[in-house]
Image 1: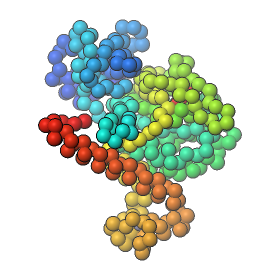
Image 2: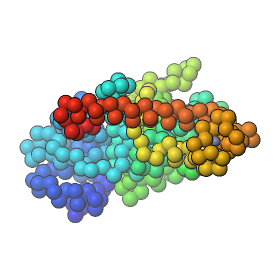
Image 3: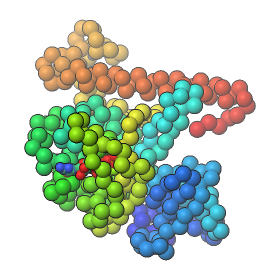
Length: 339
Ligand SMILES: Nc1nc2c(ncn2[C@@H]2O[C@H](COP(=O)(O)OP(=O)(O)OP(=O)(O)O)[C@@H](O)[C@H]2O)c(=O)[nH]1
Ligand SMILES: [Mg+2]
Ligand SMILES: [Zn+2]
């Protein structure tokens, strides 16, 4: 076992994967990516010895990945299999749809929303689908609790967390309220990815949890509370309890990549209602004995939530169709592998 890597989140599965790698290679964890260059932690130490910088030519890497680097430090040669990854669709170009891994090998995803903004349930739902599909456990974090307007927005967002069975923490990056509970997700060298729109307070949270001011924090705009995209690259930073946080830039577009059961889990309430519809293929529109519409009529479910699910399902189906076209096109060119 490479004991020196345990503090970085190394585990038995990585150890097995590393057996196939030349012993001369250097193994480390990607802590930052800048235009073709990876910063890689080779030990948990925060000094210069703990870090190497190499080019990532030809390798699809994300912050949090475990990689093998050739002894001459020339470039990232290999990425070890991930146990989880937060993946979004990077381009909306139909034919060249590409995936972008925001963070890899994470145990928890903090979905961060500011309690001040108009409660954005639709964005939470979308983030939840991505987070569930990552293979990590989503947790909803409502921050800026110190601001007075907070209370009423919190109820609606809390409900989104409740119906899909995830934890919800109400915190403040300013006063520090609720942060001990958040830090616990990092115990035992676990990794946490932080997802959320620009300006919600992700970097403020990271600084507070880490106890530094390393992550740059930006003002939000007066009128609409939107952020200014202060953080530009994902960053892996150490928590005092041994955990790891991945601060990410607030992404404008959060498009779905092909998912597993993310939608089913993010909309667990609707899926469970649908089991009671009369027809197995009920569209929840005007069919008789539709349990979903009945719940809307009883005010137990909003039509907006049902429609939101419909849009996400459609987005995913469209991507699957595009990918089928891509497979056909690349087969024609005699290529068998696509990604
Ligand atoms: N009152 C209050 N303000 C906060 C809190 N957290 C963050 N802020 C303020 O919100 C603004 C944006 O915070 P950031 O931490 O830069 O937000 P971010 O989510 O990292 O934004 P991007 O890097 O642009 O994605 C700053 O002015 C912070 O001081 C909080 O808990 N309470
Ligand atoms: Mg930031
Ligand atoms: Zn129905």
